[in-house]
Image (cartoon, rainbow, N blue to C red; front, side, top):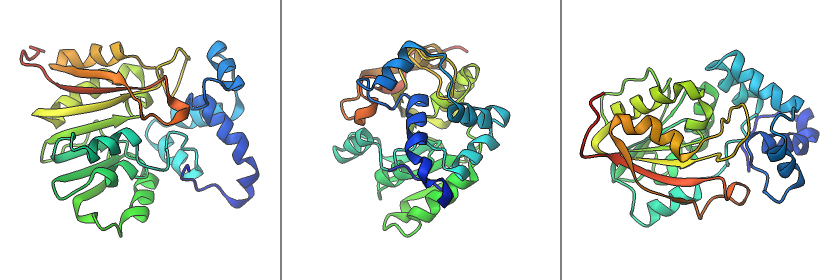
Length: 260
């Protein structure tokens, strides 16, 4: 379920809001009439969707915190990301130090934390970090992860990371900030570290967040940083409502580093 802090009197609007969020984040199944309508008419306006986007556009940092405060978190699955859990369970994730920017309520952080992997969950939202701390502070693996309220772009950790996992973070930032995102990824990742991205939402809708993405959007900003994909495949474990709009990318620094 989606973690929310809606006031009691708002419970009767949950179904309507969920539909609106599904339209905004393309989380309705492709077979849904509403989904087909949205894909065909990307300029369709919805008051609830407009309200969420206005919150974020009016205050790019504080707007996200207000979304968490109001329970407007359609990107939050309310559970660990299935493909990430699979990679962890099959032993195909790098060990060492891992970073999850835009960690939200922290499910992915806790899911891959282990004695061999310390995970830092980073989020600009105070309310998101409070939510994550409340949910997982008593976890048996609490010594293997930490939640931190900070701005990804200005944050300066003292240690680099063996793994960075990005899901619904790249698509949430303004497209003109994507080069800064790639530069920060390069600065935070160890020379032999790995970036794992879930490329979502692959669609043709206008506006955002979430902003539409494509494989080439990632390549355009990561290649100049000397980071190239080792594999890009369909995410066969995507949640049903996101199947067909999501790819798994695994990236590492190329041998020939960029001069830029």
